[in-house]
Image (cartoon, rainbow, N blue to C red):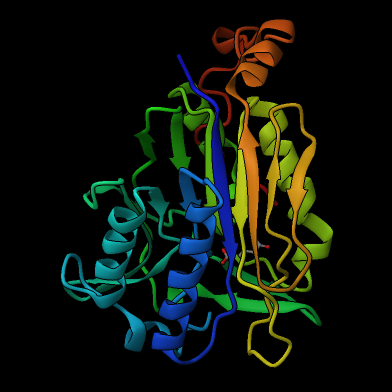
Length: 282
Ligand SMILES: O=C(O)CCC(=O)C(=O)O
């Protein structure tokens, strides 16, 4: 039976100094834990400015990497489940955008490598090509806590409803999304997308962004938020550094699923397999 718990989201400033980023993470995790949070999450690429020119130099290997060790230590020191945002991870000649998740004993519980790489070109808005330096992961990431089952995805992954639906069908109650939308797609799609994924799947969605830095090459939108299984916004930051907390109420989630049984009402036999093989869609 799922249990209620307190979730903490750390909207961290990200600088070019890795050590400053790590110290900010230390302080924020401590603040969240001393506020009673049992699960704490950090933003996408929190140890490294978001940009292809930075990823190789900031990348770390598991298990020896500095950031990875600090995350394990923080989880143990504060006895929290820690979704360690994401960092550039190196394995052999490949780099990944990876979220390491640690349990309160400091052991690695899960590792999510971003599945959908952010390659977009919106003239006058934003152009980015993650695939210039990063490789894609190919595994759906779900882990268990005593409170509930949790899914992890990274930023652009949220735009693919199939992924969160898959995790919902695997039994998650909460989706944690280290993310960094920008000043073009953030105002347009951030809140809408988080609320849509939460509502469709009747799950809590917790999206954690870096704080906004207008001087950075890539300006993050901020607005870390938690959305309820009813599609409401439970808490939302502005653009500044913040530690947000939210009470995750699993009884509320169960009531919504009983009263409006969307997941049960799916007609899998009707639409199973439709869409397979359609590669060209414009
Ligand atoms: O989907 C978006 O608008 C932003 C995605 C992004 O910035 C990322 O995947 O890192």
